[in-house]
Length: 267
Image 1 (cartoon, rainbow, N blue to C red):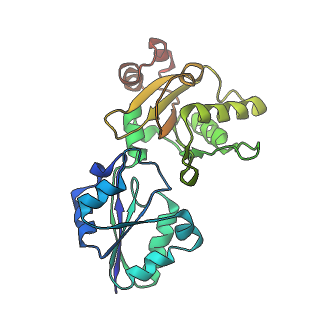
Image 2: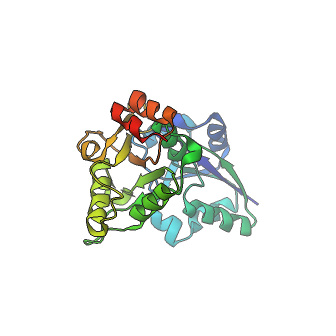
């Protein structure tokens, strides 16, 4: 039987791939890549193909989600196939499903992990990783409907004294990425309806842009100020802190430009 190897591409460009991942791709008979679950702003497929010495076929959301990755599985039944995935390969449930399908068909699977926005954003935020609660995605509003789930998750995490990592929606097919401003506006719209004072103009928040690149941006401050900040090109991420340890407050002031007054939010 063949083999299906999931290879994480990392965060920003083709240079983020690990040496082990590079070796696995070079050994593969066929190489696929999906680029819709996350944005790698600096990635060049042409440069990646030159790096690995292989032609890379891009697969769409439809192939993986609606068709169950059949085109990939058919190839993997006969030979070694590599599927390249932004970030860490198994963060998206789509890929877990594909791995399960492969194993049930008797196809051996293997995973080469890559840098993930989860660890990168937590690290760049300066907040302690064990104090994070459930993470959540802020989706684009659809036909006037704004999801209340992110608002509820932030509220529940704060009640438990936990920070919240918020992924911002990406619509790869439309080349559309949610910005820090978009995400905050969506949450403020929910606050206007719910009036629970979960997200207000004086709520502490951290905006992160282009994690993994040499030109990443991290800005901490109050919503009223951060929403006006120019974060530049996506991808963007948001973090909502809860109560701060004194080292967390120091990190936000020193590394993310927060005002000295946030020390009042220390435990």
